[in-house]
Length: 201
Image (tube, rainbow, N blue to C red):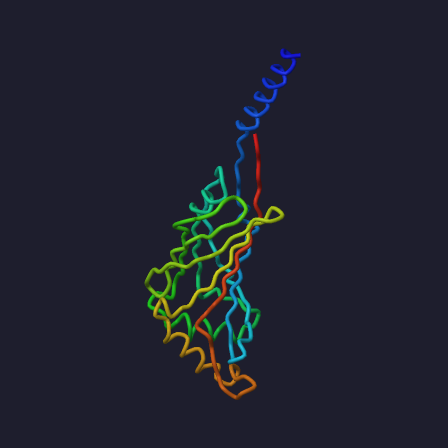
């Protein structure tokens, strides 16, 4: 009986060792990445969604964890490729908003810190906008083989007040709410979704 118990303990130890040796790798399917911004107008904060048609993503081919993979990620955006599914509005955003920036040719973002695990956490992103860099906090969650990143950018932090004012003046009547006041908010919500491929050996 004692020998049988020892055998079971050895077997369990062997299985535990085999499980511990299992190595998993994660990969972002960047060709299926979606990037969405959401701006707000009127005092009632009505959402105006959109994206950019020109987005380049750089990330490691694969890594041992979601946090490690995120820390290798960089995004480059061409602001003039703004797309809100309204050509007239897009022309105004490109000219009056992005045209007022010190560097209207590019927006760059790179993940500099990640606190979390393979299921959820917080990523600190260094965002280059209006010729300067500042940090953005974005929460992430992995569910059903998809990474979801979400955060809010207040462009005042990048001294882009003039751009907000110029665009609001150009779209003054369109930004009027029920109270008759015209407003364009400086906050913009950013949402990024990308499929995740997991492989364990």
